[in-house]
Structure formats: structure tokens, C-alpha cells
Image (cartoon, rainbow, N blue to C red; front, side, top):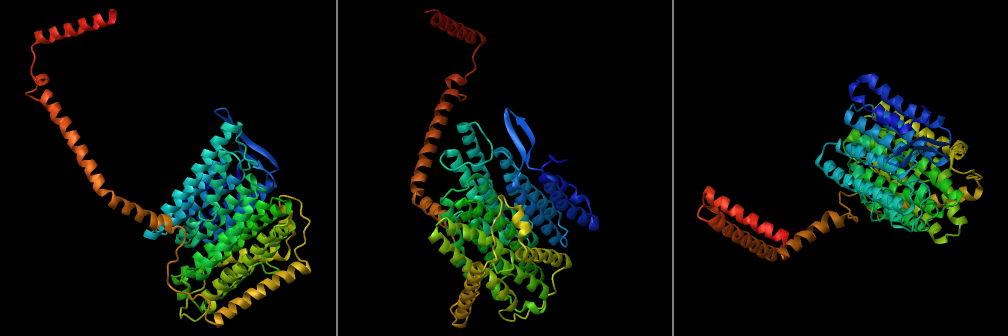
Length: 562
């Protein structure tokens, strides 16, 4: 049915999954993203499935070019995630993954803030099971922190929607802009889910603790849904340029010193989100096209990198850079696919990242934001350091760890192969991607200036890495815990509360004792009057009782008539 939200195909389709077994389950699960993608491609621009609830008009499905491109790539990501996870017949992950993907797809087609809120919260609830499915204490704690933050984002979204409706009488999810309490709350809700600086730690905390397959799914939907929401609600909001620039820069330093390679990828995910956020802040047609294109490419190449590291973790049992190395000998296909992902995220010419990131960089330069443009160039070099070089180098080539693992399972290799094909195909021939973008595209990425500039940037970045390694100045891969801003609420705040409790304990003890004495005095006085020997506790004759009732009635009548 053309008016049905494509996300519901995956959400409702996930429910029978635990009832199926073996090949039937695999084929059924693979069919759901294909059906969802077909539904997205068949949707014509317009509004569908409009409901009136308590006098409020809801627009469940709103189709335009912006929602369409995100719907397409979300369906592709769901298909890759399902294929990658087929070796693991865990119904919890399978059902949660499909519902999570379906909720994200439903959200991008939501035409009002209430529908967006429903799908927004469903992504949070479904996705946390991909973390808990690892069934470890660390995963449980990380999942709880993740759930609190994600649900908190939804609460802010709902509060903002209520205030916005009260001020304007509209719940339409269109361009909102800053300036009112409602839109400011909505902006903050989007910022939490997009991992703005100081609101970002849930990403690096939770994603590396998820299952091998769960991390691949997580990398695709939550943050890119927030990017879509910002592009829909706050295009041209200038503060986003500087927020995005900060997002591109600070994760580089953490990624360089991080030993957990999946956590390195989580920081690089934060870095890439910054390019998209900056593009939204510029707000021109070129920059918004760049944001949509980069989100499309990023979902695929980031999934490929997480898939390759997931395969390493699946086969070796570790993902620490200090414990890996030399795996290209026994996992050559995985190493090759990882290099394709690394080249794509580094924006090498002929790979997908080049044809999308250059749109954003060109838009920032054309609009005269010179300093942000310089920072974005620095961030482009930095991402080559920590994702383009560090990830494949320390996992597969740095030194021979002596680990001889089997190659990844066939379904994992198939998912990585499809993602790698898309990374190269889009990079070589970007016209089909450009045709999907929100605005008409008149842009040629393969000019001599673009290619030479990018190659120079990559060359000098590679030389810097080589020089630092040769001089022994590059941070070594060590077993360590790196402090980030989450230290404030995970360590400092609990200690501060305990310290304050110790200081105020004498006061608290005195207040408690005074309270107990007051309660005890009340009990004694009550017992004196109502106890067995008290005046009101004695047995009264019927005559005395009748007399007092008559007296009270008389007093009442006197007061009533006076």
C-alpha cells in the first residue's frame, strides 16, 4: 500500500522472526529491507496517511527528496546489517535490529513532531537491546547510560513540541529555527542524538560495548537520524557551523591515543558527523546536498569499517590495537575490505568519501567561512591518521602478533563486499547519488584543483604519520583508559555527592534525631489521651454517648442559625 510508512514493514515484519528457523528465517529477514527499499522507491512526493487525534492533525508519511534519500540509505544499511548478522542466530539482536532500522526509516518520513517523537523513542528502546545482547556487566551498564540519554533526548523533543504547539498552534515538522523555548528544546534534543560536543560521550561509551553485529547497526541510524532532523528543522542556523567544526576537530586527539579500535571508529564517527552538521549550518543548496550525500556515503563506509573490525573481534576475541597485528596473513579479504573503507572515509579520489565531502568543503569556502574551512581541512587530514591509517595498520600490518585466525564467515564477507562495491562505485560514478540529492546538482568533484588539493592533503598526512612513527613520537598502542567529559557525571559528580554527604552528615544526623523526638512526643501525647487509660480510650455507656451527641448537635444548630 503506497501510503504505508516503509518503516512499518520492518517493525511489524520483525515480530514473526523468533518463530522461524534456519534458512527460512534468513531469507525472510533479508526480504524485509528489500521490501522496505522497494516501498521507498515507489513512494511519490506528497503527504500520506494523515490522521486526526484529539483535534491534532498528524502526517505519518511525508515524502520529498530529503526524506527519500535518507529512507533509501537506511534500507540499504538495514539490509547490510541483516546479511552481516546471519551467522548469529540470536533472536534478540535480530528483532531489535529490524525494529530499530524500521523506527529510523519511519522517523525520516514523519511529517509532524508527534510522529517523529514516537519513532524517535522507538529507536532508543530498540537499539539498547543491541548493546545488552552482548550479555556482560560492562554492556549492561553502558546500555543503561545510553538508554537514559536517548530517552532524555526524546523527553526534550516532546517538551519542545508541546511548547511549540502552544506558541504556534502547529506540530508540522518543517523548518523550525531557533528563537523560542520550544524550538530551543527541540534543537537540544537533536543535538544530544547527534553527539554535539560535551553531549557526545554516550556514543563512545555504548557503541564499542555492543555486539559485533549490533555496532554495525548502531553506526548507521541514530546519529544520521539526528543529522536528517537538523537538516529538516534547522538549515542555515549559523551556530551549527561552529558546532560542526568543533565536532570534526576534538575527536581526532582522542582517536589517536585510543587503543580500542572500535572506540577509535566511534570517535571518527563523531568527526564525520561534524562535516554534516557544518554543512547544515551553512544552509546553501550545495551544502545541504553535501550533507545528504556525505550522510549516505558515511553510513556505508562506516558500516564497512565496523564490519571489518567486528570480523576481527569475532575471530580473535580482542579489538585492542596493542594485541593485534599481522592479521592480513590469515584474514586477507577482511583486510582488503577494511582498506577500502579506510580510503573512503579518508576521501581518496575514486572512493565515495571524496565525492561527498568535497561538496561540503566547497560550500563552506564559497560562503566565505575561511577559518571553519581551514579547520575542516585539518580534520580531513586527521581522519586519515586515525581511520585511514591507524585502523588497518594496527589491526592487520603493524607487527606480527602471532594470531592466526580464520577468515570471516561467508555472510560477513558478503556484506563487506557489497559495502566495498558501493564505496568504489559511488566514488567512480557519483551521478546516481547526485540524482537523489535534495536539490539539483551542478557540481564536478573531479576537477584538477579538487583532486590535487586532496592528494596533497593525504600525502602530507601520510608523511606526518610516517615521520612520527619513525621518530617514536606517535602515541603507542597501550592498554589504557582515556578520560573524556563523561568523567564529570561518571566519576566527579558521584564523588562530589559522597563528599557533600560526609560534610553534612552531622547536620543530617541532628535533624533526624530531632524529627524522631518530635514523632515520639506526638505518639506519647496520643497514647495519653487515646490509650487504654486515657480519657478518650475509656468505655462509655450508651446514655453518656447519646448525651454528648445531643450536646454536639445542639452546638451545631446554634452555630448554624446564629
